[in-house]
Image (tube, rainbow over all chains, first blue to last red; front, side, top):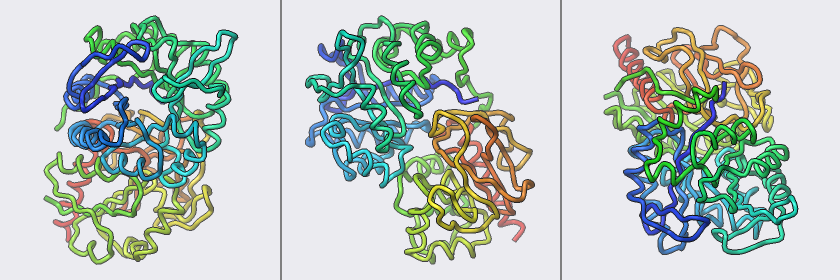
Length: 259
Length: 203
């Protein structure tokens, strides 16, 4: 059976891990390579780096972080932030990423998703959607790290994005992000119904119960979490034991003790 | 050390397979030209994306024929395994034809089949020391259907069983990514390295 994935997310700015609450109030949380190695050893199923500065000056800093992480952690690495072209994507893959997150640039120019899928295969194109409730039962897409509103409907965009070439959706609720009050299950369910590709729930994880809700109630394939891991509230291993006890199929520790 | 050559055909991430083999004490070489296979003890054929573009890139350098003629240990990973077969239904382009059969879309949803899933294997030496049902990391939508069922070394369930490893002589391929599958993946890659030593002893 395909296991439900737990993905620690590291927001990176200028080579350091940071975490904001509701996309503002950034605080420093440590060295990305060290944190990724710790999460890997704790049983993370995948690691996600999102470069939230994403300026061209800082691009080489991010690629260096990816490269050093890929050398020490042999689980999948998903990387995003400011990817706007096939060349950007190639640079991130060459640095050692397995999947690349595309966000704002594809809202402005949706063909980017097709170009990336054609060049590298849809399995490594992750479409990130930052969604905010409109207050009347739908969600709109926000871009540029949640700073710019669009009139694009999040569910419609998820469907269109997968038709164009996205192989996975990373769905962040801006209303829930950093609040630790649980994932937006209604948003998750709406997107899950609309697409065939895996959906990663993001924004709002406070404890294992929130993740169970995302998996059972929202039918998520994976959950992303940042602050509960960075602040040491739970280790990845703690969370996996709690999920396993609740009957969620997670990958538990291997019996193989080699090498 | 076993002198492993990793075939670079211009798609995706070779960093992780290089890193994984390096962690095992190997010094893998990335090769692009057929004559570079000459000195190799074993060959790894990685791959992501679709088989059609991968075949075009291999054919452009003559690496397709070099792989057909290669008689030593060969490990195909993901699309590398799919390339072993006759043809893929993804784009109906011919593949290397090292093993008889077609590559087809798998039945399960969501697709791509992405994440850690159980690999139920036979006692093939590639899986020595790896418990039956151990999860490995997958990311793909297609898998091969070998004509010769005895070539099937492992299967995995995602809306029905598909072939997650197949062998013909010294050629073996896996549909998952051992270079991204933690300690289980490292064990599998070390078993492949051991098979290179074994082949060298026999020769």
